[in-house]
Structures are given as structure tokens and as C-alpha cells.
Image (cartoon, rainbow, N blue to C red; front, side, top):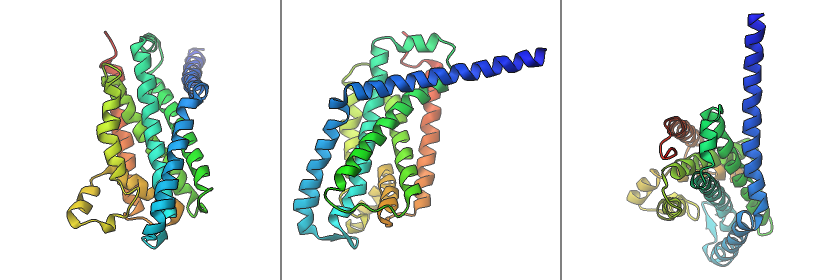
Length: 268
């Protein structure tokens, strides 16, 4: 009887956690779709301009890059750039908004485990990143023929990239004290790293010192892994990119859980 009761309690706890997780994810997705004019339309317009200017006008003069037509070369980088920026921006603004409105305190005092809170917010941010990435990929089809020689690598890379920057956005939101604080990292760190991460050029064109610096940029590995998935070419071994991405996921997830358990920046 005691064993049956213990089992029932464990099942009940699991069910509660799943319901709580689904509720957070559903709320995040509803938020994204409710303000779709702010979450989905601007990235589509921005990436269309990138394809027109860099791919169409400048690309016609550049010609080939690493033996690939320049328009095709920049597609993976632009998709990953949009996924990274939107995953990061979604969770940093959403979680800081909950913290600013003191909604997050209700989550912290509930019996909900920290991993449920973190997973729910990260899942919502990843879904927004994937939605924007899919939109950009569809836009790219109007400019060039999109191939998919390695679909598994393509999908796993974009999910891991979105997860990494969702977790990074969560950490940013935890430490942020005002709305201006969540814009500092994207402006002064994320954007420069993205532009210098091989989105618009091959690292082979750089002088040795610049090539060495580029290899210290984590976004460079994500862009190249995704480029391998779409085009079958990469400036770095794919296994190195995966090892780096998994390492970042573990490190940032551990940090996020620790911050939630300690209540750093969350409890008044």
C-alpha cells in the first residue's frame, strides 16, 4: 500500500510538472503570436533587405565564395543570425518583463522545480527562433535554390544554436536591473560576434591573425555547422562545432538553474 502510494505521488508530481511546463510554453507561444507584428514581421523584412543588398547587388560583383555562388553562401549565415538574435531577444525581454512585473516571484514560491521554469522559457524562445528561421529560409527560396544535403545536421544545429542563445538571454534577464540592460549585450556583444562569425565571408580570406581571432568566436562554429547542413561545406570540422555547442548548452543551463535556485537578481 505504501509502495503504491509513493508511486502515485511520483506520477502526480511528474504530471504537475508537465502541466506547468506546458503552461509556460503555451503562454510564451501565445505572446509571440499575439504580437506577431513585432516578433515575426521585422526579421522577415530585415532579412529580405539583406538578400537584396548583399546577395543581389553586392553578390553579383563578388561572384563565388569558396566555390559557391555568393547568394547561396550567405543563406545559412543569415538564417542562423536571425535565429540567434530572436531566440536571445525573446527570452531576455519576456523573462525580464516577468521579473519587472513581479510575476516571476509567483513561480519561485510555487512547488514548480527550477528546471521546469527554465525549460519553459527556453522552449518558448527556441520556438520563436525556429519560426523566424523557417520564415527566412522561405524568403531565401525566392532568391536562390535552397538545398538540404544534411537535414539532421541542419535541424540539430539550429536547435542547439537557438538553445544556447536562449539560455544566454535568460542569464542576461536575470542580472538586468532595467530595460536598458537587456539591450547592452545584443548591441555591443551579440551583433559584433554575429557579423564577425563568417556570415558574409569565408574565414580563408582573412589574414592569419584575424583567422585566429575568428576561431575564438562561438558563432563562427554554429554558422559553419549550419552551412555544412545546407551546402555541404564548412571552414571547421563539424564535430568540433557540435562539441562546442553541447558544451555551451551544459554550461549555460547549469548557470541558469543555479541562478534560479539561489534567486540571484530575482528575490527582493
